[in-house]
Length: 342
Image (cartoon, rainbow, N blue to C red):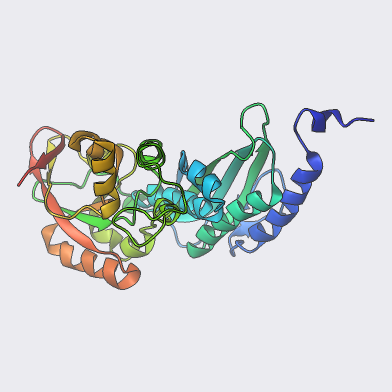
């Protein structure tokens, strides 16, 4: 008899094989805080000891159309690591330590090798942050996705001592803006970047990327950088953190500014990485749109007192090998972000 579910495009045997491969990857991420059995309906983690008033910090996100570049290149593990690092950064801005992660993969026809590669990247990211991959979901949705395409999303749980949580309320006029270098596009702006690279420039993933000694795939699939190692040693010194994702510097820095504080960013305080110069020139993209869409070489911004800048920069260099620059300051004024042109 015909398997009607398979005829509709959903293959349960394939899903079982993917789950088998994924289970071993999940097992490798379990920390001492993990609780419960693998494959249960819900993942469990204990709160770590030593907190007086622990606050859970939760966030969820995806990697957008970067997955289309991954599928085109046949490289699937980097987007899994992208996902974890993006989410780690999102709770890091509140001073939180990551505890557990959940992933969600949706595809038309499930390929066990592809799913295992994606989760291998997720597991690698979790392991780098001593975080349990507590579970996830792999959905076959043949009526929603074309063959070979998939979407990837995740959710993270972290913890912070209530009195140590960062909200932006400590920001004051006179504070300094310290930028942490990105290592590429991270996970934002790919709908525009793909059109420029593949359509306007006519390049494919194996072609050399302009102004680079690497391929298009290597440049576009650079893993979204985690700032946990760079920032964690100096968290008590920081007044606020902003993760620079969709919306660029202005759209994210404004989220941590209290009333009466304006951030003034010196536009010439750092040099854009070549990838952004190429995209701007080849795509004929305006400066304003570049600033709204891309991180332009800045993946995280710390707001802190001038006396603490040296310690924060030293921590980023010694613990993570990440470059930093002072790119501006906070002044009294209408809440917002302003670029000062030199």
